[in-house]
Image 1: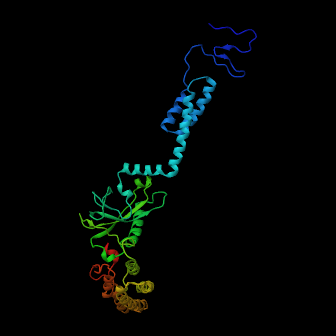
Image 2: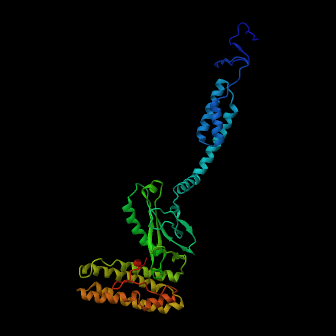
Image 3: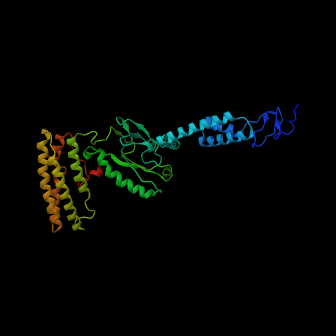
Length: 372
């Protein structure tokens, strides 16, 4: 039975002793069960699962305050929830700072979309079961040594922002990929005739997932045609002498490729200006050929090529000053001869490069880009 408080007592006597002065009194029938604080349970669950650790920390602190005021049980669970949630916050901070979440998310997106082409890198070879011109670029990486459908020679990353539209991305792909192909396959004479340039581009849907890559690649032009072996021929696979020679040759080819679209009969002034540009570029490349220390077996062939190119440069100069179309053509024809002439072939053989000039259509000048 309960014992009444003695006379004059300021505070009622509870079954667990007097209540501290100034604290609100909690009345509970003697012997009734003590309830567990719900927030303490929630904090412990969130702390154990490491899910929303900040919420677990806040709930644990609130639970401790409520327990002190109400006398409920669950203090140990609240403390455990606070500690585990604090540890979870630290772990999340470490993961976020290391970029692991971003990488995992990217992997998840790629897997969810089933688009392996988004992770292709320069130098990768692959098979495309649905074809290179299909709208679905679901590809399988394979070794370059064997047969394959495509080989990546460049990856161009576009800036962020709003989706620029299919037409704009296609224009960028044309501009970037055709300009970069000779950096990967420097020897245009070694490029098979049945190889062309393709590219994979972001779509409006993939752009929303962060896809910003234009993937430039080589592929066969015929139905069912395959590439065999890598087409890579750059400073990672060529020696210094080969790189210097091909760099000068490709610079000249790039200048020649800028020939005006109109004929000399239609616009002689444009052709004269172009001849001046070729003359200037040729002068720079001749300087590079003279300055390089060629190996003994290539010195004489390269020297003979330099002599031919000097003669060609003089012809370009005369073409740039031609007063009429017939005079222009006379110097133009002489200027073009060393591009794939005997001296060029001999120098290439001496340096271990492809020595068969690429085929061109009858009546047209060699166009290095037309071979790809």
